[in-house]
Image (cartoon, rainbow, N blue to C red; front, side, top):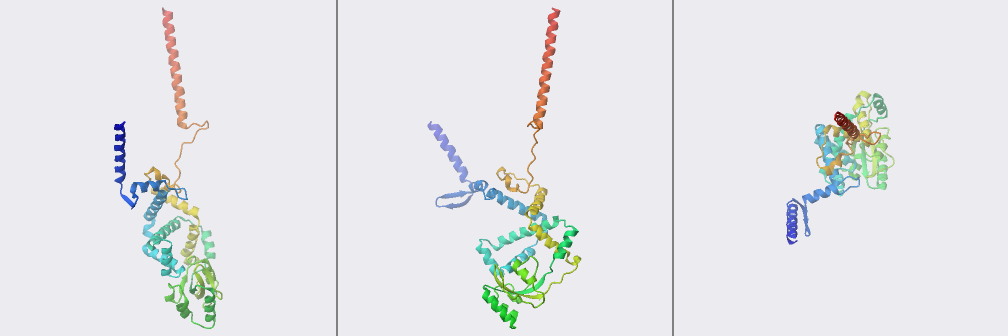
Length: 341
């Protein structure tokens, strides 16, 4: 009994030694968290989606790799920076945008990586979309060419109304931009910016597009999540022919596709299929289940058996029949010998 206990203790010691050899991830006064423990927890702890944390992380890594391999040469760092600047304008400038990012527990680098992935998905959608002539014509008919506008962004409605009064009394728009606007990104340009369809908040775009003549100013403050805007039309957009505007029109159609989650799933699934994803760890097999077709299983026959089982049954019947025939032949031979005697 003692020898068995000693052997068990020795074995436990070996197991502990094996665990302690795993690289350390973190530690407290109460102990250490090892890499293998951490990895095991990642593979077992479920998220709200039903996947484990490990499956979610692996899915993200695989998708980034697949998209980068397919379209990485079409999305440059310059493209990402431009997208970042467009987003920053909606938050009152780069400084305010970066503060907002930090308050969400993210870094600028993290957000730019997310933006790059989004641009890669957009590129994939654009390449796979096959728009009909009818769709393009309708989109062109609904298309509004981008204008050049200027705005003053303030925090309260009363200030915005006072600015509108000053402008109606002849005040210079650029001077009021410098004095009041909290959108630091557009202040150096007297509040001016290109009104690109779909790139500003809906309230802003709708109010700006309602201005008919160059020099017109919104007569009521335009409220958005960022404050109150006073908008001036600098130059109305000139809509070219369908041939001239074709790329812009297709971009608007792609934006609609980007809002269709089922279509995005279809596009990404095709890329995943072409990439021939192989997951070696059985515990993480579900990482790409949303994008991969389920493995085909053998359809059961009408009586509930599979084709293989039917084949085995047929073989079994044949074997039994052969055995019975053999026994019958042997019986005949015995009978013949008895008659001869």
